Length: 235
Image 1 (spheres, rainbow, N blue to C red):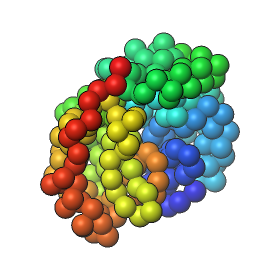
Image 2: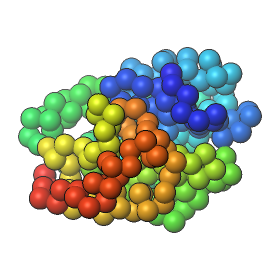
Image 3: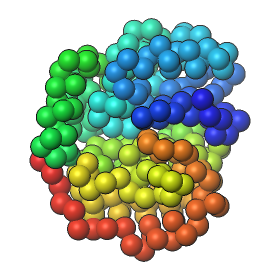
Image 4: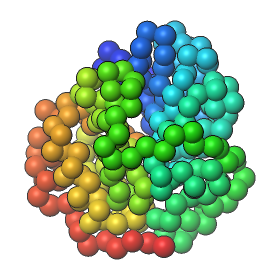
């Protein structure tokens, strides 16, 4: 587990899960990881001093199997409220992957989902312009691109923008996710401009380390001017 800020922790791996200390007696989980990640997430919470009942909020960025795989188990263990976007909501509740993958990836994730993911009720649909009353306010932004229904969450007080799979970090470089797993690259460009315009101190991605924006100024400049717009949606 990596401490990103005094109140934000990254549980890294194939996909990141973030633990947010939104109050002294309340922990918020952002994304639920791959199937089978529940025990690891609960253990990480315990290391921070939070038992299952203190996990009261579960924020979901999008409905991919690697971001909601352990959601049902976490809800059962914690009783936490689930928040997700209106487009992602029916996919989460039906345990289905939104359309944005190529044929091979779609086949693989389809079987994985059918075998391992359980439908989970979304308690509160959130969207662009909402501010959740957690930790002095967590702002919700619609950032389609990786999937049509992707959201980003901005905890302005901590200076952290959680962009999930809108962007990724590889070898210390901030860049878009590969086109083969992208619903619409032009939407990625627009969403990237939106989140960078907010001038967050830290960008927390779904895959790779969170990065401080003052250390990747050249990456940000390139993203602002040359995000590829050639890929088309994959259905």
